[in-house]
Length: 435
Image (cartoon, rainbow, N blue to C red; front, side, top):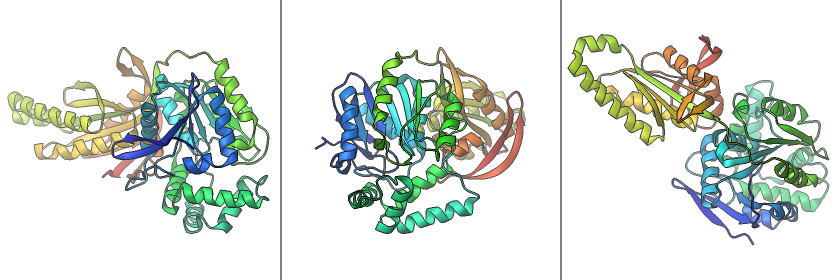
């Protein structure tokens, strides 16, 4: 039986266990739901895990809200779940690992590889998609999600899903019973609903070019081939392999998957740490600062600016932002997650209110260049342009940011498409509620 341990991310406990003692770490990010104990008692999953553990030190975990892990009061954003993965790696004593993500788990794995390339040996994704679902409109998506929540865990619904997702095993009563219980012990109806909603609403299109680690894209069947090939095309130098079978679900149903992972990792020497990473940038500045400075006089204005700087730095520390530059009345900071950057911006705008100041803020996520601790690149320029278009008391974000914070509860208003000088056209959104 697995030796279950718990990694801490704040007040949330994430269940994990380690199998094998290979010299290379590999962490598996499960497809949708999981349960560490139930999986280990299942021959199909156990055989898959044991095969991986022959070549790797295998790290397994239940995602937040699934299986043996805490769920928290609200379902977590993709970036928070990425931080959970980070906490698991830290707890397991893993400095660098091969990240393997399957189906929905491919999103978390990809975001981690783009954000923390220095800790990623290679990225392997199975049945990935840059966008979570293909629907004719929001009504179709809502209907599917509503049915999922109402019927989750019932034998009839589980049988329908298995016939669609893994028809090769749907004729077995033993597999049907196991699959229904796998969903039941893996997640509650509300968690399954939230997990699928976040998956459907997340768009990784703008993130994929920022992946610079060796990447293997595995896919099976014609149903997912267009999505998998599109995913691979957007990642620089991704290697693509179609494995046997036509089932959509069940990474363990293609026996050569482990062989492909072993071959890919063995054939790629540990790469140089890329000088670019996926980063979220935040820019703030005071509205009407020139007029206010003239009104107050140099000395009083300097004192007010000092108080402003203290407030901004307090909020940056609270939301784990890194101050990159301060010029006059403006701040430039970076974050490893867009939802935290938005909430930090909102916190700053509220905190400076008692000082009699109004700020504008802009948030953008993209590939940034690192040079001796300094951050540069098109993404930085885009963030500055977004901030310049924000109104007084407004947090304005790019479409990339909006697409990455699905499930956060943050609401947006479409501000239309804008031409950002030197960057190109971007659709922008105003944050309505980030609390």
